Length: 253
Image 1 (cartoon, rainbow, N blue to C red):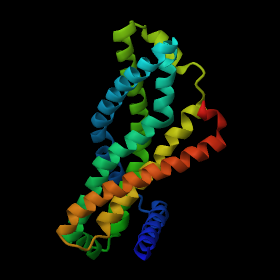
Image 2 (image 1 turned 45 degrees about the horizontal axis):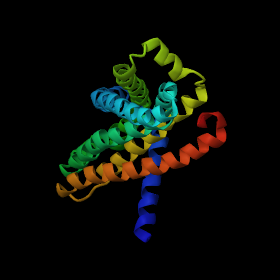
Image 3 (image 1 turned 180 degrees about the horizontal axis):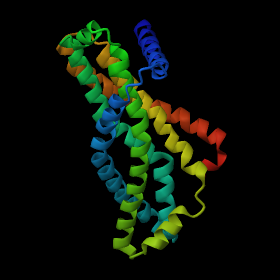
C-alpha cells in the first residue's frame, strides 16, 4: 500500500509539474508541432481502420437483434450514439495509449539510459520542458481530433455494412443517424479525449523520464506506460461518464 500511495503521489506531482510548465516560456512550439505529427498523423491510419471495422461489426450485431423487433430504422441512430458517446473516445484513447504511450516511454527511457537527458541539462536547458511538456501537449491536442475521425469513420463503416444488406441511401442513413442528435451527445464525450490525452502523455513520460534502471528499464518503461495508461483511461472513463450524465442529462439519450 505504501508503494501504491508513493506511486500515485509521484505521478500526481509529475502531472502538476507538467501543467505548471505549459504556461512558462519558452513554449517549444516547434517540438509540440513535431510531436502532434508523431501522435496524431502517424496514428491516423490505425484509428481510421479500427473505426471502420468497429462500425461494420457493430451494425451487424445490432441489426441481428433489431430485425426481430422490426426496428431496423434505429440502426443508424444507435450507431451514431454508440460511437459519439462512448466507443470513439475510449477506443481511440486505448489505441493511442498502445502506440504513442509505448513510444514515449521507450524513447525517454533510452535517453535517460544513454545519458542524453543529462547532456541536455548540461547545456543549461530544461530537459523537462523540452522533452516532456511537448509530448503531453501533443497528446492532449491530437486525441480529440483522432476521436472525431474515428466517430465519422465508424458511421461510414456502419453505412457500408447496412448498404450491402438493405441498399439504404447515404442521405437517408445520415438523416436517421443524426436525427434528434444534440450537442450534448457529441461535445462532452469528445472533450473526454482531452483528459485521456493528458493521461497518456503524463503516464508514458513519467515512466520514461524517471526511470533509473539503465538499458533494462527501456522495455519496462514502454510496457508500464501502456498498461497503466490503459487502466487509468478506463477508470477515468467511468468517472467522466457519470459527471457528464449529471452535468448534461440529455447526453444519455
